[in-house]
Length: 237
Image (cartoon, rainbow, N blue to C red; front, side):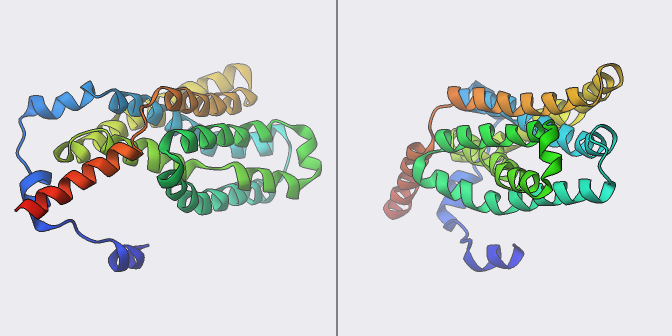
């Protein structure tokens, strides 16, 4: 990835970096990013995504070994297949959203990712291990969701000087609630209601991403317009 970035990612022109991207802003102006509808929606979506990610990664191995009574090796096989699928889809789906739009691709990914924890709840799948591995391989869109809900949509929804701030806001809210608070609640729920409830909680995280995607304003066209404006400003200077 480092080589690919070095080889193919171009730095923005100096005029844009110095005149737009690095424009000084006050603290109140930085806080104003939360007034953009897509930014606070992406904060909620980040909570849903990180809840799905952390609850699934923490409790799926326990569910597979303690409830489904599979060996740790089998649990590793399923989780490895799931992670490998996420790796490939993390490249494919964000690029697809450049053509189809962020919203439809995000809706598709949210629905697909919910299938991963739900698949682990189906006892019949464990009699056909390659089938279960195939399902979680195809359905794990986590890396693609992260790229859209935490980076692309926030940055395309705010002025250029606030792009990094929008990413930071979505990441901060997601980490505090989705990556910290929700797994703790999931652990408490597992102790009182059993490990199966954690898989439903992970699926609920994807459901939250789906709802957020329904409410988002499409940004692909807006992002293209902002890029055109920046190019025009460079040409004028």
